[in-house]
Image (cartoon, rainbow, N blue to C red):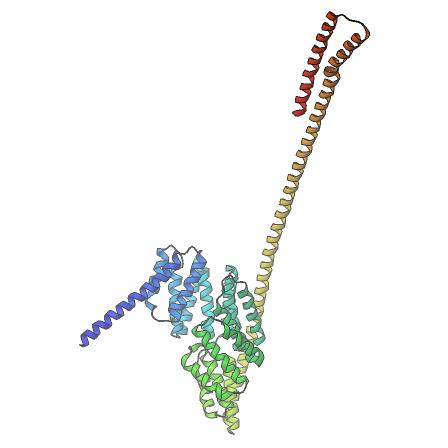
Length: 483
């Protein structure tokens, strides 16, 4: 019986493995067969990797196979794809040091192969990893490199992602107005996109909600929570962020008792990336709710945790522990935590000054990018203006030639008409009037004498001959007038 059950399990695993393999290949196969350019295909493959390797473990053994398919379909980036998949797996397992080490190697390979899409993804993930390691300065620098690459690619979607990441760093270190500036930039870039993803808009709203929470603006917080709640783009991360925004609202409303269970739920079901942020607000809520012992335990967890703790959160944790010790009249312990808070404050100030310098460089990069963009627009407008002038000149020349041809034609027709008129005058004065004058002369002879019958017959023949000749001349005139 056990052997039968074991056989069923093996068959089920094989079928599942085959299905996973088929789904991966079919999806990648569709991308590779599309008529998009290289960068568009690689960007879609990168999104596929996030779904396959960062949010699931079912595809961990398929990274090499996906890389080989790129070579089969003559799309470059096979080595970069293999490294990218491994980096996402390390991030999912929270093996941050291994991810950071592999990122350094992968960036060198991508630079050597000029794979800009993967290079952007490596810089972006390096920023994520350095944020999780608590190194905000290096994270901002990596975001700067990622943003430069996004600008070089001219991809507004990548710019949105980068600006959201930079705003997240600024929120973590307490530079909330700067965070809102980058979120506004992300919104502008998002509005310029042809194809917009609702999940991206939702992320912008939720980050703005967090920034306004930190500033203490409840109305703005409620506004952006309402906008985010109406968006259809639902992902696990977005749902967790929306829950987080809900407890932000409860904290601002000083409803700590209601905020505590919501924060606990996020800590149990959420990802580890915002664990210490949630722990800090849980500790603060415990403290304001009169649960000092729970606040001490939670704050100590933050202080001792090596990763994903910004200097500001650790500083707040030390200050909270010092406040609790003072409340309990534990002066020595309060002094201990105040010294730790002072040390952390000095480190925080130093980091802020360095990040401020880097932020200035980011602004300079943006100004340079804006100058280049304006220069491109100016050159484009100058080209359009030059083409407009050329077209206008050509149209003027065509009109002039057309006008000249018409004028020459009219002049020619006038000359022809004049020649015809002179010819008709000549016919009238010489060829028509001559037989008419002869007829008049014959009539005068008849009128002045008494001709006999023979003479009259002779005169009538003369009259008939002259009349016939005059009729022929008149017919010639009629033909010429008709022509």
